Length: 400
Image (cartoon, rainbow, N blue to C red; front, side, top):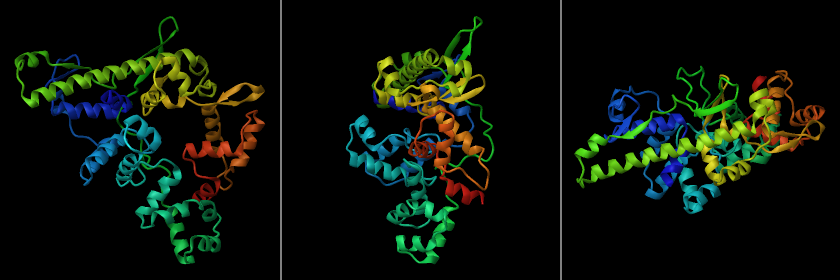
């Protein structure tokens, strides 16, 4: 069960690399229609850039940690978003793994000591605080600095010096550090990646015009047990043979279960989000994970793992599966509108704002209300932070 959950949580890229890693040690795996051993395929594969997960697992492996803490830190690498943020709460991880909250926190602390600085942060504020810590600030001071970003944006040096109990010179030095911080743990690439996209699901129309969903063919190799080799070692009780055979069988079953779960989710999305597929993202119907989990007969945490880090390809665009789930808000004429559609509207408003006059949360709220969306300023701020967009004071400073 734990293996199924771990594999289900992995993105296609991370799972492909996990298969390559196992293939490099396990001659019992066969991959693809060629019938070649995955062990041979792995040997022919040139080493490329490490994924975020692989890089973190290497760093954690080099740390001196108690075994339970190391295991938890390694587990958490599979809970990260592509941008390095951790969406799962400590309580959720503790409940899923059956481990104490204190152990989860120790594992998280180990993860957050890895590069890139800020990885494992649960909020924008925590991401910034971790980066400030990398520049020498104690964590308590870093948290107090991040809580006063608006004052830094307004250059209220005297008040900051008083509140933080620092000299004016030190406050200005910290202001210089803030300008160099990232809003996401994993830096955005300077140029688009040359690697092909590997969608987990593909939605397309058949000849009759009906929507059909399938697994992405290029995302993962197909796996099978090398039956010929299995017959050769039949009856042997060597620990390597027994362990390798068991790992191969477990991996194959977990990958198959992952595919079945993703297909069920895709089929449900095609059924429930017909307006999205017909008219575009602005017509995404409100849907929460609890409703989908109930419809599929799975636990909400299982659904959360299934959609995290996964993509659905539709008409040439790759959509994160997580973007299909959002709570409803009152829209024009009282009709419900999805939170995702509102977030898209907020993003468009901010992207179009004048460079020297960024929109405040109140201004964004007012424009949305003019369009018939009943939303509060606090909700606008929450959605802006969810998208890792800095406040207007920070955007003004960066563009100034």
